[in-house]
Length: 313
Ligand code: HEM
Image (tube, rainbow, N blue to C red; front, side):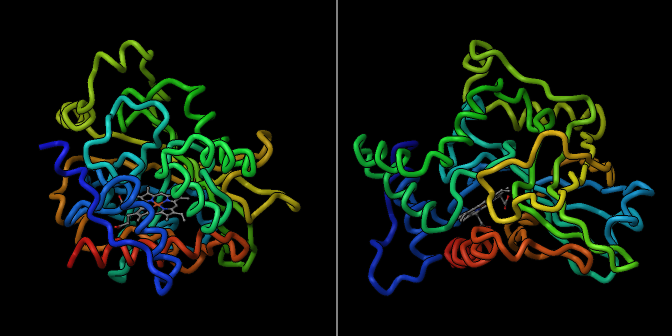
């Protein structure tokens, strides 16, 4: 019943809709509204593991996860709102969302995608992009990209690289700038990056096509049967003048990075564990601060809350 589940169930946008509701409606219009499911990153797998910080991590941030190991709940996902998105699609992001479970019972969240950039600089631009693509009108889509060349970067970046062979062999990026503060009160701009311990492994276009649409879940389960799936987590260090407001732009390639720890996923977790809450990029421990200048970042909490409200109705 693939076609049925793609039927559009979204409520039409009205003048009274708030900005986050407009964005979730636009996602639903493009991908279909799927009962009980996320409006974006709909297809995914809930996992568990732990994070072990390096000794260097505490010199950057006083957040508890950089002082001692913590348990993780995570979710690998495909971008977009199609629950049947293809695992072999090259120009789609893979995601990892994580709750770092802190000793006081709270979470510090980290969300990463498999591209160093996002597709829009502001929520208004993202709404215009989703609306143009949903119209399927080539002129409207062309006009959007002509006016917003920065929105072409993510697709171009993904198309220039092989399809990740596995959720476990992609590299992932936080995209936004965060400010870390250590125990001495020193502040440092960073962007997060996670690299698979065994390095990036991709598939040729031919091999990706041959794998079909649904191989990541089995592949991951087979990997877990042999042992944990691990990533090195890095803080890429910003320098004065580096932009902290633009998730469509990368920092210069020569920025140094510090390994802050190892993410190790050990196995699957029931989907309900991931679905009962929100992975929210602004839910972070003291010692980590979202850039106040990024327009997309604060909106994400509001957007995710609307998606959560609808999927738990
Ligand atoms: C205004 C821009 C954005 C909108 C409207 C948006 C929308 C959404 C929505 C609706 C969800 C599902 C939330 C839920 O029901 O729990 C989601 C999940 C997610 N988003 Fe975004 N997003 C945006 C920007 C970004 C950016 C810049 C990143 C880059 C790191 C990102 C990464 C993710 C990931 C990894 C998930 C999966 C979370 C999970 O597995 O539960 N998003 N997004």
